[in-house]
Amino acid sequence: MDFSTVDRALTSLSRRQPALPDEVLNLSTHLLELLSSENLAENDDYARSIIRLIELGSASTSSSGTSVRWEPLAVGLRLIVDYLEKRTTEIPRSAQLSAATDEAGDYNDEDEGTGLGTGGGGVYAEGPRIPKTAAETAAAAMAQKELLPTSSAPVFQLMTELPTILNTNVEHAEPRVRSLVAQAVGAYARYATSLLNWLDSSTDITDPSERNKLQLATEHAQVGRRNIHATILLSLKSHLDMKEPSRENNPSAASDGALDDTTGWRALETNLHALASYVDGCVGKNNAGGGSYINEEAALFDSADTDVNGWFLAGLQHCCVVHVNRHVRAAAAAVLGVLIKSCMRSRDPSHEDLLVEEDSPFRLVLKETL
Image (tube, rainbow, N blue to C red):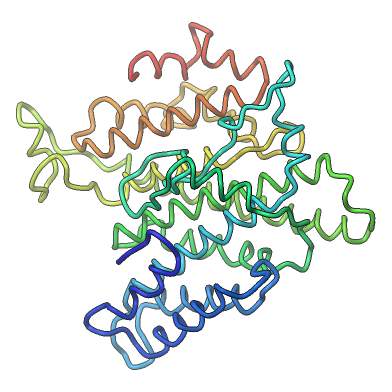
């Protein structure tokens, strides 16, 4: 499978052996044709076709009784990431820029979330990635036109469908699907919180009825975003609760059935990637309006009681320092990195205190791990 571009991902479906069902191949051809159409942001057919492709790769069995292949699901998720990233860059930058300007009046573009493994920076992860150079990314940003979101835009249809899709596949048996789920989580979070930034300071919407509809659609997207986060945390905690076999003096043999310490650990690694992608995507600037991870999830950093919320920091420390799998250790370190970024992004002195106060549970974890 080639996930480097959306057209290559769609084309690669026709090369899979054994051949995929005709409906999948016909749908991929149709999506390829739609890619060249103008104003894809307003194309309902494109959004519906993506959802249908995901459905064809999601059911447990097909109508003929055969097992469903994972490839359509993976390509559908790749299209989702591309679609949401482009819709995010279309949101007028004036409001986002003013929200991201620091006290000195300097805008720090690196403070923005950039999604997981999509070539623009953000969080590094194993799995399908989209290679881009910095020059290509800058050129694409310059070429991207601003487009005012509307309450009837197809993107909100996708935002309604996505939480169920992502929650269902966060522990998918195919690692490439889980990695693409993590990327889609980041793209969803970034679009949803960028909408919050824009609506908070935008004067572009003069129709009160349209503003109210957009506000409701945006609030619905935040409900879906937090639902995705809850599912990731639930899955992460269940994996952390699994008892690791005793390593003693042979770390490489710690995983039952694993050949070496580079082999995966069920969905733990991709859970951590999904969490890092989510945190990195939460670019909300208005603390009262939401969208800031450290604001919304402050309880995870305040409690030292491992029976309540302390499991979170204790689990991250364990994954960073002592977990047998080196990919899990790297993924956990990435989570700590974006959590630090979220503390600084919030511009709230109390959140910066999490990094500097000697008795801060988060600072203690950082001292032990980094």
